Image (tube, rainbow, N blue to C red; front, side, top):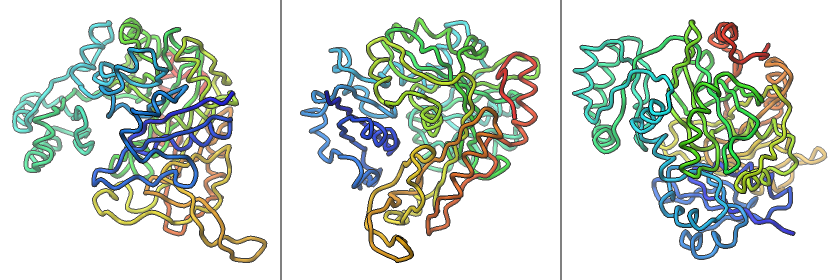
Length: 450
């Protein structure tokens, strides 16, 4: 019997899972929210059947679907909630679970309420007030925006002068001033240690048996230099037992049950040299490219059936305990500033991206382009760019080195005629080489090795 998957997306994240589900026999429909300028997102054109009429999502396709998957939690939560309450098979956030992530105060309060030790935090809606606070409390050096405020307001300062300058700079930008007024932001004490995240999938049957331990690489360039991009690659493994999960993830179980939550839950922390984890924030949705890492580690043949099973209370996730995955984001200029420069980035051929095991397309489409076939240049269907965040490559292995070797061997086979770039040090930065052994002394990331 044909199963039907509806993806309600906001940023072209769902293409890879859609393609894999289609190959597994699912019938697909994909709604991908328009860009901020109102233009349609072109990712998936020629590959997946896309919905172009927004109202038809609610008139027709929600009723049609056997599974509704939300790759993000920033839109449509309120409109979907009545369907969820009526028992529709939805894998993804709720308005209340979204607040745990987007409203920093609510997220921090939830940690405290369930006995999770937290970093001292203060909430603000005004940059000038925050500046005055930092001058009296110079240990507060981390700024994080709430809601959908610009992620440029996420900043870790070296010292009080550094953060004071940034707060003053933001106070002169009308966009940031309005974001602070309407959404708010928090300042946190800066903790030293090794950053590590842990997550898991939760549904009516409780937690999946697999926990997801990960180490993110948010900066644009090697050595953790340059601007924050969201994520340039991730080191991940699936484990059955995780000390960090026991400390900062499982305590929230009663709240997830109360919210009838179904989906992925993640919390990242700074683990100090005494072994104390200091959780930073909740992620109540799939992470990117984290979800691609997870896909590379699952041994399930069907990439969507386990999600449907989770919705009805069954855990059918299959994986190899402790196996390592490394993901590498491949982008093109002007990433991460293409939304500012508005450069046309659609239609550039992507050669060598047919490796289904390692390559996960994101902002990609199908076009007719020059292709070399038996030594002759011919026009033929080929993948092409549909934005600047083009694809993710994953590699797996029993060790970090093995996973890196697998990933970067696959990256080298991809060619894009527009100066594609990627970090070459995912999984092997100094902070991880030094930090992983330090936290392993305290029982974290046990068995993870180079």
